[in-house]
Length: 171
Ligand SMILES: [Zn+2]
Ligand SMILES: [Zn+2]
Image (cartoon, rainbow, N blue to C red):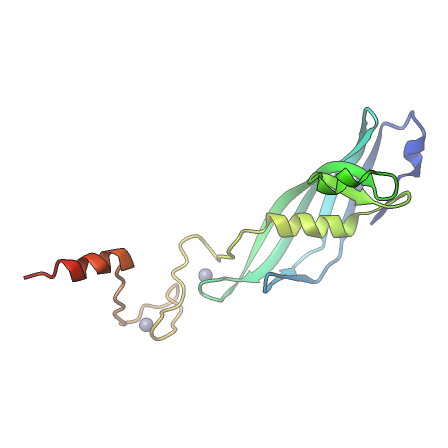
């Protein structure tokens, strides 16, 4: 969605409601593929604070991704917020670039989509997991240990303890 900010020239306009959906199939980021199962939904407003325009948007999305441990696809519904000061690319001084909260636009147009996608990327967990206790794949036979147990015996010794074991061999 492209928001026309020209109405803000009128001092009596205090806020601008925003509500919409963004159709995006997937995003590929950090070698991950985030597949959206439904349109991304957002709603919020742009409002005036002194001389500044502030955007606050609630974003909700439903996505599917492969688990980083067991490689199975899982889906999750999540929410995030896109919030910050609107900064005009042409009229602002250089320092604006360093302002992390700044949401940059040019002309009278604010292109929301890219900002929404960035907000989603920032809110994704560092490591995708189907669930916290995912047991992952067996390092020996490759079986999905969430679904089946295997008989593999894997020596799972903390490397720090392994050193101690060598230093103090059992008699
Ligand atoms: Zn998993
Ligand atoms: Zn195994």
